[in-house]
Length: 79
Image 1: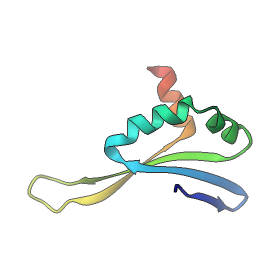
Image 2: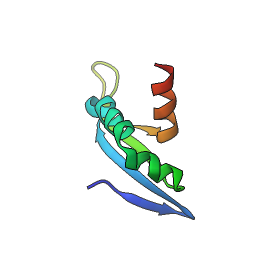
Image 3: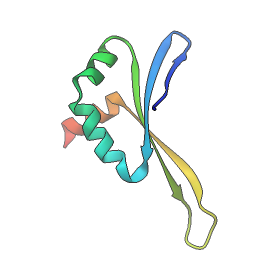
């Protein structure tokens, strides 16, 4: 399951995934009417994806990419 967190007075839903599935998850979120309703009701929605990154031959570290719902919508509109 994906977490729902309350930070102060804000409530945040997080869709977590592997980096390779980031675009697919974004498409699914933007196609889901409940995602827009969540944000319009004052909730925050974020897509988190994880990948191992690092220079060739060096230690790889897990790196987090965070994209907010507003950033997802903006990317879709500019495409």
